[in-house]
Image (cartoon, rainbow, N blue to C red; front, top):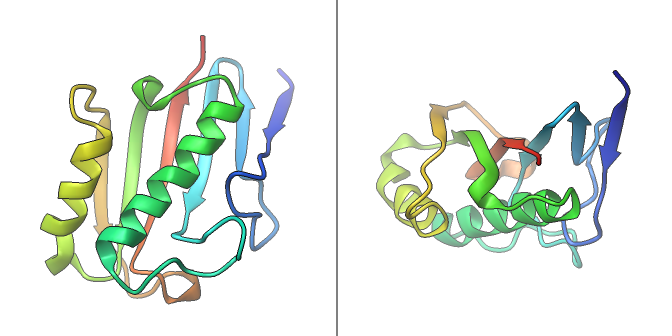
Length: 127
């Protein structure tokens, strides 16, 4: 089965040797999205809520480029640099996944690229 790369200008360019997303069969794998503004290439804010929102907006843009939406998300993985901010992150996350609640893992890590406070990756079902 052939892999298809997904790329959009509405999400930040990859900061390394990887793709924004890859389709295999009827599944889209979205690479971890940092809270980077696609136009400026900078972290949007030091505020973890705004960072979480930008991560989700970036992932959403990639899903839309592939013909999917957040209601098609099967699983997310949320990486955080400080688990004590879980409630704030969860509140923003819940605004994006109110009725549809995909499987999820949330993992505290020592450090994230560009010293971001949060990074989110997704697995999405395609029609």
